[in-house]
Image (cartoon, rainbow, N blue to C red; front, side):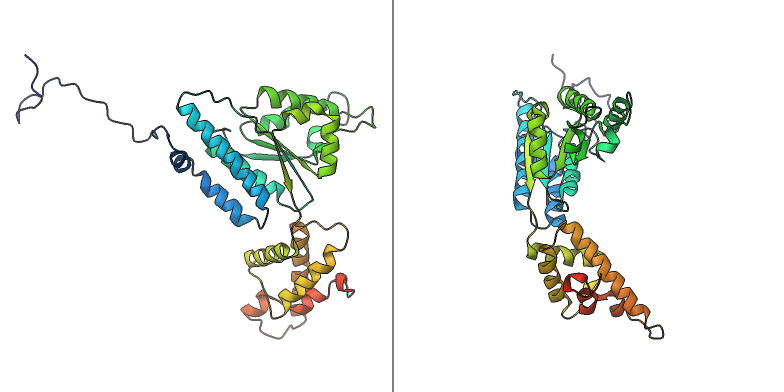
Length: 317
């Protein structure tokens, strides 16, 4: 006789098979793109990238394309389909101040949220952090940096300085060989991003085909336009609790026209430096008015003279 599927109140319950309760802490297996996005919250990171950086539409689209590939690969894996970990090593090329480091930080966070790196941190280095000055010094330095970067992203700025063929006693090639080995054998635990000027990076890859073959994604960061630089200036001032006074934004626009024609312009970095000098001139101007009570507006407003005193107008430093 089968066991009754009920129990009389007050009686001892029969041994009825009970389905184990689902663990609420374990996320269900994702079956749709929306499921993966909801579980990883990766869209929030991409939205932050849009908010943090002005322009760079081609770069932002490429980042979204890479994220889409990773999302689809997760869905393939959940369906039991072949989903070999894709090569995610990258090259970021462009002039200084175009947002390469900021994008690398966001990329590390995206990879972490989608489960492709364990920690999602960024370790930013240059040649000096990897290459030693004497025999036996380079390998320990390079391996120590790689140890710190494991589980995240290693960002090597001006990577072409690792290779100096004109110097037979240079130890950069040793660092490159160690990097190549780790990029191949531990690519599921480390993503390497090489950054620098495009022409120099092209020469570097031609001279190091092993490195070139391991880079899956090449992102070129364009210079900012005049209007984009003006918008960047607005944002930077806002974050510093400053604002342009009457006629000051127009003066800054004229400043940018002149500065763009001069050498060594570094995009957003030069904008930040220009704003720092404007703040310095504003402070010097207010400092001379020792007996006047300064209002909040006085302390937060950049006036046209604070900008036009720049040497790009032929008036000063």
